[in-house]
Length: 116
Length: 110
Image 1 (cartoon, one colour):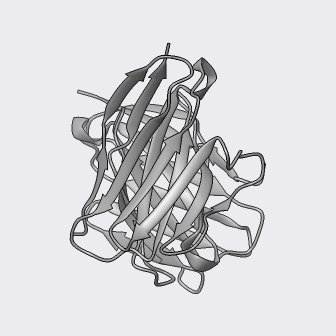
Image 2 (cartoon, helix red, strand yellow; image 1 turned 180 degrees about the vertical axis):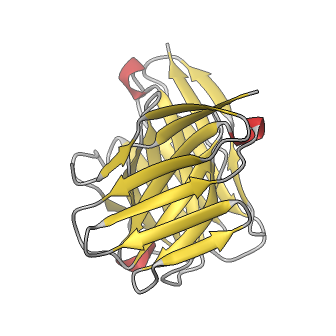
Image 3 (tube, helix red, strand yellow; image 1 turned 30 degrees about the vertical axis):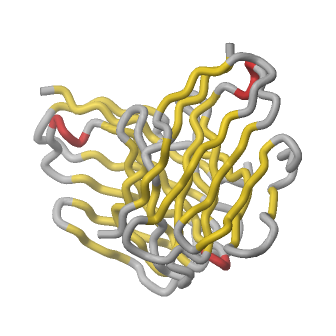
């Protein structure tokens, strides 16, 4: 089955620093990747939709300058949390799509970000 | 909530029993998908049911969809301890965008 690799799985950083999270589709070309945020025991909140070669589309309330998304190739999207603060601590999950409607998404294993 | 509702929020049953989780939504859908998440991990796709389908099976899983009531259910038969996880429904909109429900935390007691 399709594999999506997300790295790192855990990261601890100090306030004010930036953190980059990578999402790679290992065995298929992902025309679209999605970035989600999940709080403890809560649902996944879509942050942005990332299309290869174009600017990401952010959901309402998500600061695009805070959460920089780059999708430079069909197999890699990155999310950079800039000037991280403790309230940015969360579980971030990416997913990748083949680009066809009515087909499932493939998810990475998530990144646990802790900002101290 | 735009995300829709899932119930119950938590479910604890004995191994071997069946587990039923329900999902309701408010807007039109292309499809309804169910995912499983083990603690601290990503999501694993279980079943996708299209808006013109009413029931789908996969192993011990059975999903129903009632578009007139805007609801879906996931049934896990003969539950096992390894089924312990959170289960999310997600409504598929255009361009692969998914909106997730709140999830049901399922605990299977041995």
